[in-house]
Length: 231
Image (cartoon, rainbow, N blue to C red; front, side, top):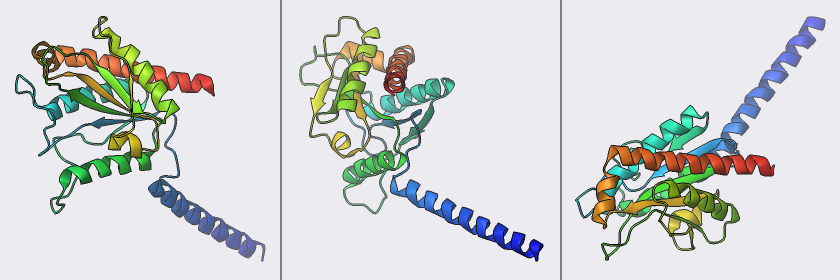
């Protein structure tokens, strides 16, 4: 009788564990479980049929974004920081059957970020302007996000290592879809202007891309450290 009671108890425990496991899966898929304070998402803008900006030197933004993003991922992993990427190859995040691929691509990125729920999401881009002399890295954040503002401020300071004469400041924005719809601190890092010939040439150089990746990595590490101190 004693052994029978033990067997029943074991069965009850196993059923409970299975139920808890299923509940955890449901919570993760619904975006209600955070992956941790040491998790970061790197979003490499554009891809596939969407080249992004085309440089004055014919460089494609989508390629530079991915090259820098992979370098950042490598550095963060060496620091023991968990890293996820919205894309790791030249592709759009939208199905072939979708009519408006750019809209679906952006929605997929947002959904992925919200479900993963990282401590920070960093979207890597390259800028462009109608006046060729305009240059310099700049960071954007959602106007109504204090944590986004803090992350942008830290990242903008880190990017000074690329050009100490860069007077650009982090800039609030309330219209960019990625910034508006993500539920975690999210920043957009515009690494430079592809419309400026000198900067465009730097941005296709592996050596300079490494420097950009170093700066972005340092900004991310500093932000994560600041959140740990606050707690």
